[in-house]
Amino acid sequence: MSKKIIVIAILFVSYAAYSAWVYTKGTELTAPLNYAEQQQKGKQLWQKSNCIACHQLYGLGGFIGPDLTHVVSDKTKGRRLAYALIKSGNNVMPNFQFKDEEVNCLVSYLSYVDSTRNNYAR
Image (cartoon, rainbow, N blue to C red; front, top):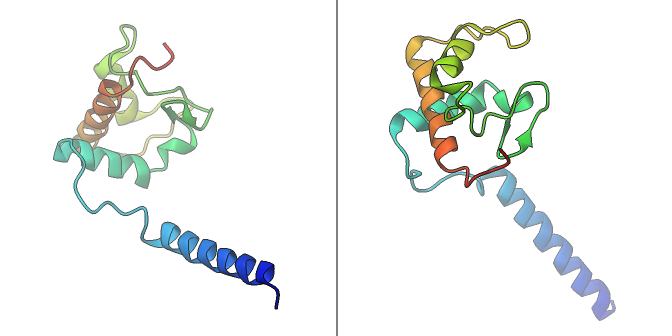
């Protein structure tokens, strides 16, 4: 075999092994993130409920619902509207039947996102 084929084979196997690691164990956090337990629970609910399918954070996500990066600090929306919409939904957003504690966790997570937005696209 030529050296080129050996190098290509090694690169291919390395890439395949690295990809397998990233998509199985490589995305797990080994240390807790630097925010409160309530915000962590909110993030888990956000992921479990697949909110990103309709909403965006930091400009990434779906386009059916609004970008929620700065919803908590928005003067026309704010915490109370975010709470109400998460709690009961509306004609576009489904009612997920969240308990009050879960809604508080989601709003807390959105507050964390808002605090880390770095003046993202207002």
